[in-house]
Image 1: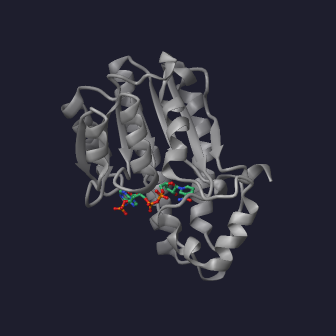
Image 2: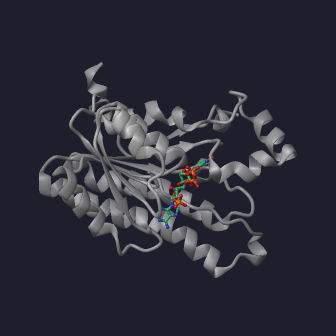
Length: 251
Ligand code: NAP
């Protein structure tokens, strides 16, 4: 099935140091990509996974709390590997508080990383795709809260619902340039992001009992979907948000 082969492609993955970002970077490397890993403080074990797959890793440090670094990220990728083919907008944060008490800081912090930086990094990468006359693939990380309301996570729900909408808008505007914009909506995945939920016995049982697959997802569960959306196998897929949720939304 060589339509899934990514040999010679270059992928930027934000938040590549841990969790789902590390899993997707490893999967893309295994399928053939060189990886430009964007992390805030430390690249984690991801360079080791990428090199073990026989691919190159460029270590880029950037804080996506502001859009200041977006052009530098693209420049660093082009300097390292000469081009960009795939962008995975994975970096994200969550803040929990009752809507009555939700602060402006908790609103802005989440919207800035999850939505604003995602948009402006997509814009910078899409301009590079056009400059290369190559087309390209943008994969956003959405959430169950792109489809559902949730509780006590106002800015997260707003941002992830926004990610679903922006995925459609950007797909519409850029499909004509050979750019595919799609999203993956992970269900409940076992990462640092959900450690508190998994540590709460009652919440853990409530969540597990509602997942038809009967288990938390893992970063490895995103491997097939991210390779599909990064590869020519998905060339006619535009503006879709693919739930990878063990059946949560079907319930
Ligand atoms: P995670 O382990 O907390 O990882 C989040 C990643 O985003 C980390 O690499 C983190 O860097 C990075 N990040 C956060 N703020 C950043 C900033 N200002 N600048 C640059 N990088 C920043 O969580 P995860 O579960 O892997 O989440 C990855 C994505 O999946 C997020 O968008 C999340 O909303 C989404 N998601 C997760 C789940 C789930 O169940 N786990 C479900 C649905 C969607 P640091 O390590 O430096 O903090």
